[in-house]
Structures are given as structure tokens and as C-alpha cells.
Image (tube, rainbow, N blue to C red):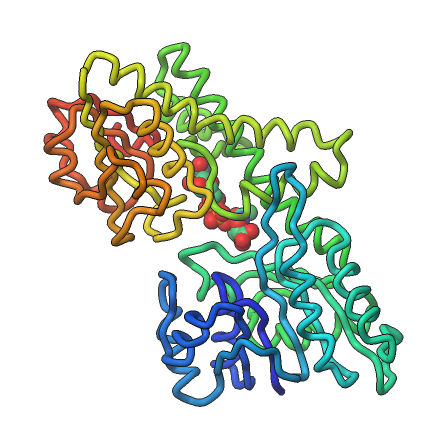
Length: 410
Ligand code: SAJ
């Protein structure tokens, strides 16, 4: 069986690799020729544990190849980004472009699965677009000209992708029962978790609801951390104590919520039901306000220095990964550098070799190693609980003003 995976990013490439190592003939398609070239060499353009071994093995066995042009296949998996614009509306242009690249190569009989996290109705939209471009095809099952369309949202945690791809349960929502069945057969090739079948709209919402659930719970923790600061109590101890209750499980506060999923997906629900989604919207606002709150705390401490030297530990959106997308730490460093032009800011991020462009452009921000940055700093701000930060010898912080947004140095 041949499978085309459109989009070789954080989800598409691992999925392509796992399908290939389970015996399918996989072609990965990406608009970025550097990505295509890297994959064909068996290399991976980002950090994800165990992924490179899978990709290199699959390429070597001749089961995985990459290209910029969509070929024909028995099944297509669309794993392209669904970012949002200024008004928190989902941008479906990548899904449309994927559909437009798939439509011309269809012969009838193919399965098309949308994996990208999508607002309610996106799977139907993708299918409508394909059928508009190919009026000779139909969703009516079991004909020579039938196509099968389903949504199967990805649910893997960055950093654990190769494990969770295999072990997580999956939700599949077909546009009809036959589509769900065929998608289930494909995912059963590598997924050891249970596969739950539903309709496409429920599958789309399930994914959004999972991430909104987490967002709301993190917002609760972040609100508690700000209330605790006002009341002058230790939020970490507070949460630890409350969590001893058998039915309480509060998450951990931090500098804000980053990544391209939890900080985005709840807005798709808000956009679909703006009058109803009040709690979900409020949670987003609390989490989005946290970076500015942290910046303000650092600025209050920096006031006493003419030329404050500030070490900021962590730029990634969470521990032990190199992903800086939608990272609250990045936003905080940027704000600090702009608001404190006389400050020197030493950014410490062991997982990157280079600052992201907007920080690189700032004359008062430099990328430094942990020890030299802390040594030279008046103020140390911990933003990401990377292992290297957790292991840092605390006695070296004795003379410093410390702002620890993750509670690792309590
Ligand atoms: N965070 C906190 N406090 C916590 C937990 C997380 O502040 O107690 C922050 C993290 O630092 C990070 C953000 O939240 O900035 C998101 O991190 P995460 O580890 O909760 O989640 P992601 O974005 O890496 O992955 C999520 C996962 N969803 C759920 O756990 C419900 C993953 O399973 C999804 O596949 C992924 O989103 C996705 O792609 O949608």
C-alpha cells in the first residue's frame, strides 16, 4: 500500500517515518526543498528524540522518499499547519493548497485523511474543494470513482512523538462510515492504542477540546500564581498541598502557554461559538497575559540598576526541546530588551545555536552559555525548566536577584 504524507513538519515527518517502518511505501511531500533534500539524506531538520533513526532507516530501506510534487497513492495524509491570523480566525490556506495538490492525481478509491488540527467543518471543506476540482469523483462509497475522507487529529506530545504515535488512542471521524473504516485500517498498521470512530465534526472538536481543557487548567494555575504573588504566598507549595485532595489535580504555573497547539486551538472553539465560549476565551486571555506580567516583575527588580545585566534561562516553549514557536520566553526577552534599552540581556538556550531573528536584531540581547551568563548577571530569570537549569548549582545564585517562573529552585 502506498501513502503520501503532505507536510513534513513536526507531525507529518514522524507519521511518514512510522508508516514506512511498518511496511508501507511512503512519499513525503513538502513545499520546502531543503526539507525534502534533508529527508532524502535520512536527516531530520528539527529535534525530536528517535525520529532521525526512524527516518534514516526507512530511507535506507527504500520505503520513504520525499518530493515537492504530490504523486498518486492509495492514501493521503494531510499534516500541514493551520495557523491563525490577527483576529484569531483559522487560516485554512495550507489545507486548501494540499487539497489542490491532491485533487489532480486522484483516480478513485483513495483515502484522504486530514490530520492537521482544524476548526469545526474543515474536513468537509477540504472534501468539498476536492470534489469541486474533480466532479468526476464522489463520496458515495464502493464505486470505482469513490473517494474516502476522514479526520484523524494528531495528539502526540512534542518530545515524545515516536512513542505516543504508537501508544496513544486515536479518534477517527469519517465523512461516512466507510471512510472511517478505511482510515482505521490504515492507522491500525502502526497504532497500538484503541481507535475510536465518530463523525468528522466530533473528531475535529475532540482535538480542540483536549487542548482547551489543558489551557483552561493551566490558566487556573497561572491565575493562582498571580494571586499568590499579591498575597505573598508560595504558589508551588499551595498547589502541592491542594493536590493532596483526592479529586484535585492543579497543573503548574509558568511564564505563559506556548507552542502551536494549546495557545491556538481554543481560539478555534471561540470563533465557532463566540457567544458561548466565555470560559475558554478567558483562559486564553489569562495565559496570554502572563508574559507581560513576568516582564513587569523583572522590570520592577531592574529599576535599581542603571545598566542591569539580566540572564534569561530558556527560550523554548517548554523543557528540553528546541522549538521556539509561540514561546512566551521569546516574547518576554523581546519585551525586556525593548523596554530596558540600557540593559544587557543574556539569553541562555542550549538547544539552539542562533537567536531567533527578532532577538538577533536587538543590540542588547546576546546568546550565552549558562555559567557565563549567570556569572555576569545581576538578575537571573528562569523561564524554561530545561534539565540544565534544574541541575544548576543553586549556590551560584546566592548573590543574584532570582525570578523563577517555574518554581525549580524553590
Ligand atoms: N504548561 C504549563 N503548565 C503545565 C503544563 C504545560 O505552563 O502544567 C505550558 C508549557 O510550558 C507549554 C504549554 O503549556 O508552554 C504547552 O505544553 P504542553 O506540554 O502542555 O503541550 P504541547 O503544546 O507540547 O502539546 C499539546 C498536547 N495536548 C495535550 O496534552 C492535551 C499534545 O498531546 C497535543 O498533541 C499537542 O498539544 C498538539 O499538537 O495539539
